[in-house]
Amino acid sequence: MSSQVRVRFAPSPTGPLHIGGLRTALFNYLLAKQQGGTFILRVEDTDQKRYVSGAEEYIIDSLEWCNIPADESPKNPGKFGPYRQSERREIYTAWVKTLVDNGSAYYAFDSNEELDRLRKEQEFLGQTFIYNFTNRQSLSNSLTLTEEDVQRRLQSGQPYVIRFKVPQGRSLEMNDLIRGRIVIDCNTLDDKILFKSDGMPTYHLANVVDDHLMEITHVIRGEEWLPSMALHVLLYEAFGWDKPEFAHLPLILKPSGNGKLSKRDGDQLGFPVFPLDWNSEGSITKGFKGAGYLPDALLNFLGLLGWNPGTDQELFSLEEMVNAFSLNNVNKAGARFDIEKLNWFNQQYLAQMPLNELVVSVRQHYPSLSKVSDEALSKILTLIQERLEFIADFWNVAHYFFEPLSAYNEKALARVVKAETSSIIASVRNVVEAQDDCSAAGLQMALKAWITSQNIGFGGVMQPLRLALVGDLKGPDVFEIMSLLGKEEVCFRLARFQESLK
Image (cartoon, rainbow, N blue to C red; front, top):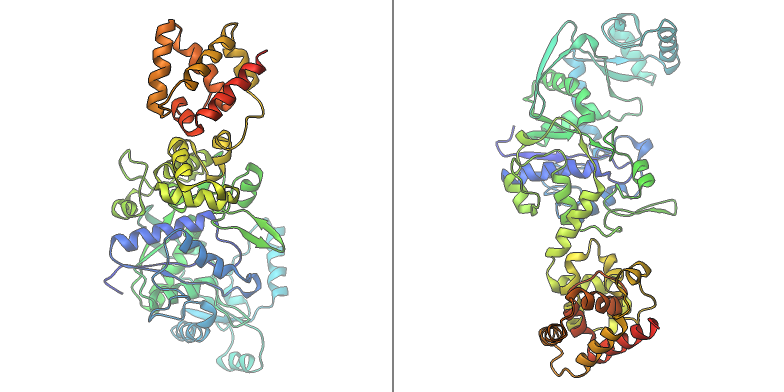
């Protein structure tokens, strides 16, 4: 086995990449980069019945959008290819023959009808049918047939599968880097199919053979594969190979914490579960990118789903996550998917985005702003950047900079308008009209001086002033707003507000 860390993300191209798969890819990437190793993408497409056109490209595009591209992949092959299992059939055929020859596997000619009959008989008795040492000697397989009979059946083209011969009466001890010591009674295992009747390997055989030949040192995958670990360890032993380290990641749970997160949960609760938009039969399912999430925010959120850095730090760049990551700090328990927390991460990363990049992103989202200068847009964004959860929030937060107010918040009017408000707004308008320095600082100095001279409460002026300018009581600094709107527009809005009070 390689002395250099080599890890792989091995999805099946049966549809779009789920958020749980993306987290698995991230954790593999983090370990590889921290250890100066190699991150591999291997496409496990042996199940041709479930193959979905475009899924492989989607997986690759998703990893690239998240800035965690594979070092070796079908798109960027290295010396351990091919990287699609459908192109490695001859490799699996040779290695499964090795298992048959050394007695670790056997040909099984049982028909589906015969196996279905046996399952129903066991169900009738309240039991579960298991194909293993308890009955393998009484079924139609190469353990009970003569060598001549086996060869005759093979040569005649009779359908068959190849099953692994699980050892009887053994207690198998294993170690998982996250879950620790695991002990399995081999008598509870069934003789899994390694090679199917269509000439393709099952996941179990292909997975072990590929991991060995690609010199994988750590198998980091989801908790749902934990029941397969015993078979895989037994396969390594049967081949006489050193096994890699295993680490099974905790599930990503529904927001309620009850059960594994699914696409249906996202549909019902209104959030994505795929990295990119997915087009299936003309119906588009929105992904995180299409919903306006930044890849860095999504990765930061995913990194903390099941992994604890051991500190209070929450915001991690990808480089910082690489440096801090350890499988020792991955939790056993499932991690609850909290969309509000992800939205918070997105807000934090938007607040940190360089202004020039933010301007470009806003322009891409709002082509109607083409006549607004970069300078003006930059000034507005400087005021509201920290208020944005998504780029799409820009218009709701900043619309009053670009269009006349159509209405005032009724609750705000009832709260701040008093008998003297109209005369106060008229006086503020006079102060602004007389002001030569209409910078934020100049306007602030002039209005504060007037308020002091009139012995008026500051809130009695500033709240109705904000309402007159933006139609609500929220928003950035009032004087900055006034400076950007300009004297003429400010005076127009004050006069209009005063008129509406009549």
